[in-house]
Image: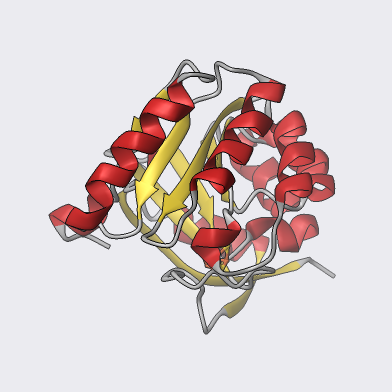
Amino acid sequence: MSVKVKVSEVFKSIQGEGIYAGSEQVFVRFFGCNLNCVFCDTKPDSFKEMDIDSVISEIGIYRDCRFISITGGEPLLQKGALKELLLKLKKEGKTIYLETNGVLYEALGEVIQYIDIIAMDFKLPSSTQDKDCSESHKLFLQIASDKDVFVKAVITPSTNTGDVMNAVRIIKGVSAYIPFVLQPVHPREKELTDKLAKLSVKAKDYLYDVRIIPQLHKIIGVR
Ligand code: SF4
């Protein structure tokens, strides 16, 4: 029996976050997440249970685009189905970009050979109002650093400096050259401007590549 995967949507758009913002990608949004971030706007509430070939067919509608974003929710929750999907996509010569909350390091180890780029979230407890995932993030980043990886943290009015500097220490412990993106929770939130600038200066004392990047898709009004 073929493996099924719970997928919420497949669509083409531009990448709105991180250092690849502006790139055209086909997005495959996996259903389900193991975290509960207070600012979440991407946790799907419905899905289709699909076999892998049906997902490949939907992606194939956009055959002019070879850049595939595997996103969620948290795609690594469905690691068996994900592995099968990635195996087939790599055979078709696609470039695989994984968007992940950066916690499920054992699952990452099982699929990393099929992934080209990892966009890893670092969940700051003062931003998410959820649990502290620092230890899992550290183990995850150690595995992810075999690939092209960058780390992104959402900055909100409640984010504290200690949380950000803890992330900085963990990133530096793996490599000071890994890009670190500070993403304001809302693109035009003026009260965050000073905070972002101060955090960026502090992080640059330890890391070579620190950037403030708002969500491009919200600014230009695409999904
Ligand atoms: S990890 Fe991502 S999908 Fe899951 S709750 Fe947080 S923001 Fe939403």
